[in-house]
Image (tube, rainbow, N blue to C red; front, side, top):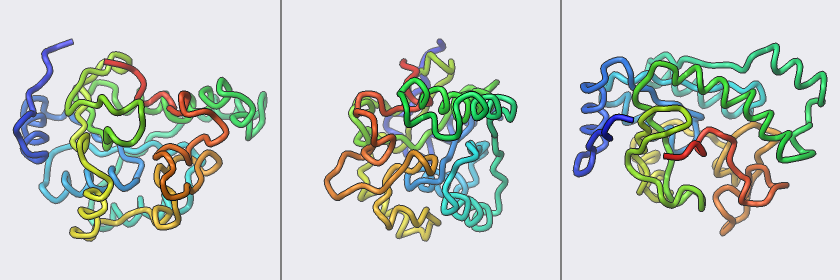
Length: 230
């Protein structure tokens, strides 16, 4: 691991611009079109920052997610590179375990996430040096120690988390003030939005991740994208 780039004391725009200057062509942002990711997309696009924006299409996303995807590329006049899971791997999974095997065990669910999300992410991050995310420290217990920038051992990449100390209210205010397209599922009680069979609305006061893999206990509620360690 190289020495972590210094971003403390700088604005988000200044930090991203610095990272792009340090590692030209090697800074990537992954979006799933939730509130936080839409804020980061707006900051990148509104300031013409040379960051590659990519997304993972698992094949099981909500229709509303595809709609905000479309509104985003129309508003910002950008291309969002899309990565898909291996058709062969998905086919094998469905043939051997069926379309809803993830409900049967944590092992099955993580296996599905690995095929549909982790493997495509590896391709998206391949050759890159900096990975920008929309993670916030208050999103879950696992993310409370989130740093502005950290080293991800699993993917061997610097991970920059510009919204690490933002509150959800601040995120929503940015969306409102800047007329940023957002997923209308957020208006229906969905907070963290992933694949349709694995996501549901939550009640006021519930944990941020309560709507994801609700049939599992909280200690297992990660999909493998952000559990690689520092």
